[in-house]
Image (cartoon, rainbow, N blue to C red):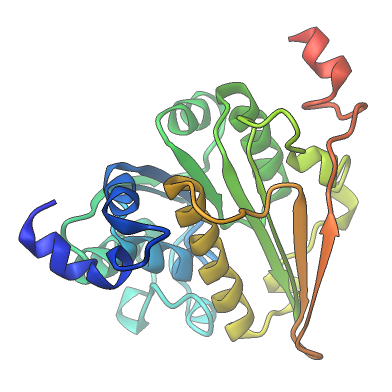
Length: 253
């Protein structure tokens, strides 16, 4: 690290859990951020501010006026722009040293496989179940850790999956078949600070996983009720019959 980096990240470096070694791990990391909406906005901002070396930003959408209530990466002047382009401008203004790769479009097929393989960690900011299941399979294939969260109305949840650990469950262990439970903000609404809070927690979990500090939310899921301001923690175990990571799936692979 040079003197400018030592100064910029000094408040993190002084933390004994992180220190210079942890900050260098962040500076060398490649993180894939899937979705630049309500969750993706705060998580991308905090990862950029924290000094993640390279961010690959994925979104297939354009900024709409209805996004601005909660998607704080984007502003009034960005309406009708691609969210990847809008996000890049904001993140470069915050920290021009962070390298950005923009992937405008739906992450699927070979593009998804290549993007996951090239990342050290993935953070999911989507509200699309098909994308989450595809991410799960790709992360299992390439043994990549990822941070998953969801927020709707006044409720949210967050957890981490780490295929490098033999005891880690996967997304399908949590939701074996969730197609019938799909919800989105356009149809159900969401309170703005909720996605800000959960997106910031996603960034925190990503930093912990990259730097190898603390106890990430692997095998645990946190749920939050914003109306009562109550958190609950549940244990999540790997399922032997899981279609993606269970014993039958492993034998097939």
